[in-house]
Length: 119
Ligand SMILES: Nc1nc2c(c(=O)[nH]1)N=C([C@H](O)[C@@H](O)CO)CN2
Image (cartoon, rainbow, N blue to C red; front, top):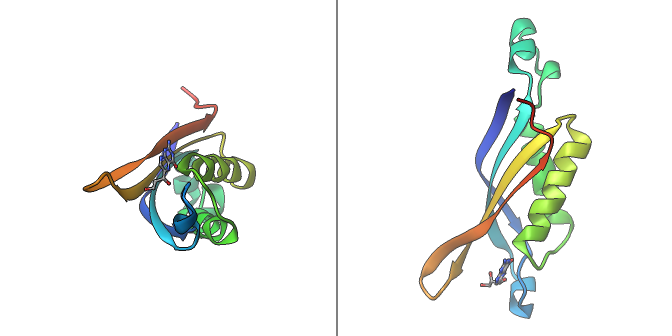
């Protein structure tokens, strides 16, 4: 199985469990790995035969614009569902990182893996 990846995608969205967080935009950093057939795409040198990472990035930015979330888990779950449903890949792993004060600046987040990963 080959992997197409995106690392450090910045997505601004309304996210957080507190009321004040729902009134501001916060940045999430998203890392994505998804299954794709790199050999098939490479043999024809054709983007139509793989997953276009620019389209994935645009779709996740649109998801961030479209609604607000309380939990990073919820954003990660919806993002994984969207990738599986819309990009023809059987497997995705997503890491969503948010910077918070605990009380020092700290990175927190979640990793979800969805779908079936081929051997
Ligand atoms: N497992 C989680 N824990 C917490 C979340 C979250 O999304 N998932 N969110 C918060 C607050 O929004 C926090 O980030 C504000 O600083 C607390 N715990």
